[in-house]
Image (cartoon, rainbow, N blue to C red; front, top):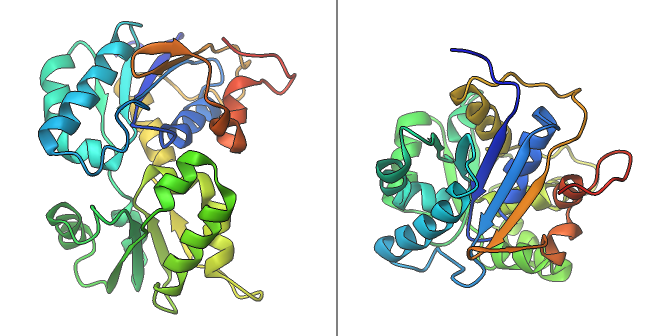
Length: 270
């Protein structure tokens, strides 16, 4: 496969959860053009029926595909479960579609105990139980629902984030070696999670997100080499329920959002 020089990556999610993977792509390829397609009109996707969720994700993907990206990342665990087959059926092989899977396999590789933080809809679901069975067989795994955490992250409501994180930490068994962040929104507040799980100077468990692996997989799929030292010349296109717009103010509350709109020299992208 010929190696690509120019790269354009699109990402789809209901909301700000796509920022972590977008920032990971930006770190690997600062020269990559990014298309962020989210759905503020239809979020949250979690409570929707699989059919409705797939329809919303397809709408976001079609809006992104109109910008002719080289690959599309489904930067949402729930959408990857329910919408990935429909997205691939419509868009591949012209547009490679990369889904997001909770990082249970690498987290369990070093043994247990392991905790999985996820939305209430995902916790205990057949999908998550199948991942545990396939990738953490013989490892002690605790499933921890995190009500309200994704919503708080979406609103950039720091007080609500801290409350939701503290609640989930209080229900996480002591002594876990690793915690899987089973919702892409959670990666944006990993430092708050780490602090809550390792109070009073105690070492926190290792946190496992999916953003880095998904970004690397997207580049592999299109034959693009990582170039972390490249000049940060990529452009940024933001689509909100199909409408071109500026990056939401809430996104700028997170380092991942800020990294996408300014280069190290402070020059605005896009």
